[in-house]
Amino acid sequence: MEIPYTVKPRPDTGLYNGKLGIWLFLASEVMLFGALFSSYVLLRVGAEDGTWSMGLMNITVGAGNTMVLIASSMFVVLAWAELKQGNLAGYKKWKWATIACAVLFLVVKWSYEWPQKFKHYDVWLNDAKLLHEKFEKGYQETVSHAEGGDHANDHGDAATGDVQKFVEAFYTKRFFKETSDASQTAFKQEWANGTLAISGHINAYQEAQINVEVTGWNADAGASEADADRALVELGVSVEEAAEDLRKKGGLIKERIDYDWAKRAEYLLGQAGFKVTLSVAGYEKVEAHPWFWRTPRVNEDIGGNPRVRSIVLGLDHTHHHDEIEIETRHISRLSAYEPKHSTFFGIYYTITGLHAAHVFGGIIVMLYNMLPIGLSLWHKDRERFTNRIETFGLFWHFVDLVWIFLFPILYIL
Amino acid sequence: MGDSHDSPDFLQYLIRLFYMVGGVLVAGTLITVLIDVLFTFSLPMAALIGLVIALVKAGFVVAIFMHYKWDKKLIMITWTMVLTFIFFAGMMGLIMWAEGDIPRLGRAEVPTFWVVAAALLGVALPAAFTLLTIKLLSQPAPVEVAAPRAKRVAKRKKTD
Image (cartoon, rainbow over all chains, first blue to last red):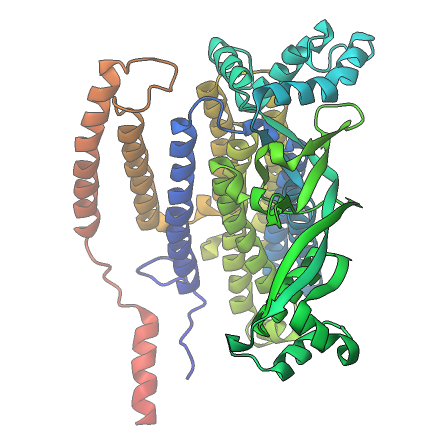
């Protein structure tokens, strides 16, 4: 079946059908993004003082990405202008430039901007006194450094040498932008209650080494002796000597093993009728920057001990990302800058994610229009192909438009 | 874009415009960033400045890049968009100026003016929407019959 297509504007609408269609589509897109924008505004306006982390965005990256999208928007319309002049080579040149910009935008967002956030943590402690101790320890050097004169103006009040003032300076910057009565009241309250978060990157942590032990075997559990042997073999335990003993008297299966192995062994042995106990034999320091950690991940209970004993946090706002060690039993909450962190990040990832999905879709359509299968239309019906590129351009400008509004809202406000 | 605008001269003029608009957009972004870095405004002020610049940029994109300036026939869609926007703004206003729960625009109590204005807007908007819809729908139908449809009918006859 051939879909009837008109290249010329229809007399009643004054547009060719494709263009009318894309404008109607864009109208519905306006509704979609409008709903999200209004949600954002209402959440923003309704947020309690000191809960909206507006100072966390990297404006340089945001502005850079805005420029990239603006450039791509210009390239796409230039590509269309070349087609209008019958110049396919020129079209290809500008179209590749557009695709390059779109890919750059997504690469910056998906491999730099977001992952940075997924590795960046807020840690809340359950004791105000301890929190102040940690601040004291973490920022002392930085504050005295600031007194030295070189960096005296970096953090406002830091020069007074008072850690509390220093902490207040970036608390205010993050939640209020400028010092006011409201910011001072909010900070005093948080400082007194110890509800402030310590921000930074996890540079290392003490991870549990686990002993896996069986304490007996239950013949009535529904598993046969063969099943039990099979489970042992699967875990690499030599069956000939040990199986009988393990079933009757129990014994150590594996010493100082990592969490994943221990959990798998616990499951397999449990299925085979063994009674299994996991216990922490010791802790090993792991130097890594873990992603997406949450509170249950670090203080998961293993035989009465936490899975992670302590984390080493490289502090924000210090000159060398000074490190402090925090024991997980003191942590009341730990969260990366992921959607679950707060309302701000929830709506931030929703809106920018939907926008990125539009960019991604645009790249696919552009690639199609660059491949022989898409270009074949140019050789068949030039005007129609030109119109197709124009309607795609309309969509692409819309994506640019959305970002034009997203940038000030998310990065500046 | 209409047929009368397809001449090579006009295209050259358009291309120059495109580069100009690109420059305007870059400048707008730079200004936004500079203002944010150099000054500290209260939230409503920052919102106003940021959004006004964004609106200007958006205006250029729609008018030039999307050649809206020359697509006058898009009037139906324009009205739909404009009215939706006004309706949306009014709706947001009603919520934001509600007295009960958001004393957060820098004042403890909302002045009566805003409440009255919001209420008037709430009445005026649906009324305006209805009136304009009626006006649009009562425009005389185009005299010319659409050409493509006639063609299709002819084709079908041939195959019969």
